[in-house]
Amino acid sequence: MENRSHALMTGFFTIFLLIAAILAGMWFNRDRTERVPYVIATTESIPGLNPQASVRYRGLEVGRVDDIHFNPAVAGQIVLNLSVDTETPVTTTTYATLGYQGVTGIAFIQLDDEKTGSPLLKSSKAHLAALPLRQGLLDQLEKRGLVILEKTDQITTKINSLMSDANQKIIIGAFDKVGKTADAYADLPKQLEPALQRIPQLTAKAEQSLAAFSELSGSATRMTNNIDRLATSLQAADGPLGKLTTTIDKVGGNLQDVTSDLTLETLPHVVSMTDEARTSLRAVKRTANALSDRPQGLIFGNSPATPGPGEAGFVAPTK
Image (cartoon, rainbow, N blue to C red):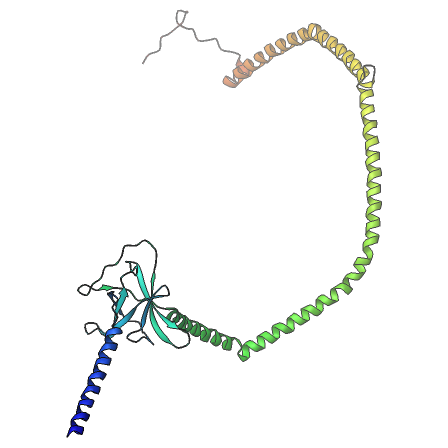
């Protein structure tokens, strides 16, 4: 009996000691750090993120992820509950991204701020403040990679259509024409060689022409000087032009004397003869008018004129 009671007491003591050790371990490992709760609601995928994942602010570990669950009010939305140290400067411009640790693929929450000096974001268990979750580097690379792959596929399709049989024939024909053109350009130096050999001769002829032109310019200069001297001699006071002017003046004086004689002697006679001719013409005109009015007067003679008022034989006309 004593052995059995001793063994029972030993078992109870062992169990009590084990429970005490567990409680002591839990007591000493208890996290006594005071933290501020925040919440993140997102529809983005969060691969590799698990509860108790670390929360870092610009690389410094400042908290952990307390819980991950779906939002029952919004289908497809994931809610993350965070606990962050009180000293962490979470502001109204702070945002979260999803980061990964090395090659292990373990995800964590990375906090960052758009600018410094923004007001602090207050949060409590009664009023949780929400932080926006933006796309991380891997998400951006994934989306951009899909876009790049799509464009690569389009480029490949266009290259395949470009390298079709019909286009290959066209390209080969174009290269053939380029080759023929290159051959034609290769023959140009041979064709231009005779012309190049004639360039020295043309240069010599050009020099001769310039020399002849220089001589012609000298002759023209000398001719110009002779013309100037001739003009000077002609315009001199005792030169030919001066003598010709004197002669013309003398002829003009003689003509003026002749004109004066004609005006004083001959013109009065001419005027007198003109008056007499004008009087004779008037008489002839009156005779012609009289014959036209009374042609019988040429036989019977002119009848006496009809007496006018106040003359003998005047008879007043009656109505």
